[in-house]
Image (tube, rainbow, N blue to C red; front, side, top):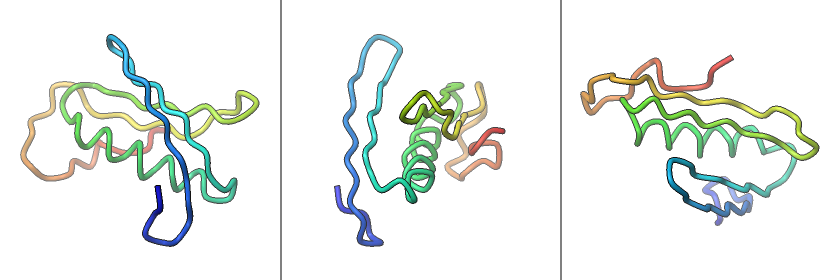
Length: 86
């Protein structure tokens, strides 16, 4: 996958019953940006479902966490509640 800013990354996806596993490979200094782009897009698509995207990095280090509010109405606009969670 070639991203618009010229860096390359690779995402492998495995879907199961109630789970989607993602494996992301890219330059270390850009991992947080990749996590934001992919995680943020997934919660936007799944708006209203309560979906959470939790990244684990090499060595078990915590990555970013993204969440879509459960039961939120789909107005066709991005919700402020969809995004990185501390």
